[in-house]
Image 1 (cartoon, rainbow, N blue to C red):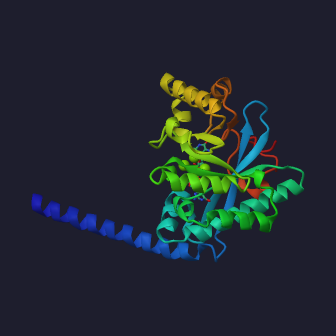
Image 2: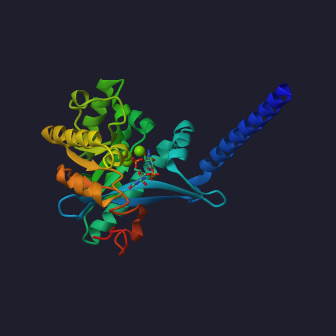
Length: 279
Ligand code: C2E
Ligand code: MG
Ligand code: MG
Ligand code: MG
């Protein structure tokens, strides 16, 4: 009887695996056509000054809405796009779209910095600075209004190569942010060698601040050291008033999170919203 149960478990397991493989294949196929079919869009989430509450920037976040499958999370399809070698083209499209949006806001008299996520594979391609330069030229956006978000893991490994890439990007006049800070294995001793303008404290710390004194101590230390190294600090995932108050008290420069505003389409960014997305 145990044997029969085992067989059933195996059959169940394999059919489930099969389903997963098929899901992935289907998603791959769909993703290959997503850009061409106009299924991709960019949402913008406000980054506000912790002291004045003013919206000073917006992070561009990629969205994929499949006609049948509905909204698919970037956490799911971006790694897939990397594997399939689609991320360069998609990443460039996001960059161009975000720069065009930032220019449109500027023309409307609301000059906002726009932050764009760069994937590991994009960061490794030697011609990234030329691609960024071309898009800045094409859209005529002031480079100072563009921030590129990288993660710690991209700076690990080939240090000289990463440093050279950052210098070339910085040479264009854009700023660099380190995303999800605190979740990787880097340290201040390590990142101080890189020309980083902005440090984004990961959501996990902001969440833990509500319940743990140690998380508050960690965030406080991150802010203090970042400031002493001349970096600006943004806290991610701010959802509650209590978090905002604590972060303001700790001297955090900017806040981002559902409390300040959810990611919304560019056209609706300055529309009056209930969650405070509108300045
Ligand atoms: P990220 O760059 O760290 O972006 C922040 C994520 O946190 C976004 O998820 C955002 O919607 C979410 N978020 C913002 N405020 C809150 C909050 O208060 N609470 C909670 N629980 N979440 C909040 P999203 O849009 O699903 O993106 C996930 C990740 O996908 C991003 O993390 C980024 O790593 C990646 N990603 C998104 N767009 C792009 C892109 O255009 N290119 C690349 N390479 N990666 C992207
Ligand atoms: Mg980001
Ligand atoms: Mg992040
Ligand atoms: Mg993240």
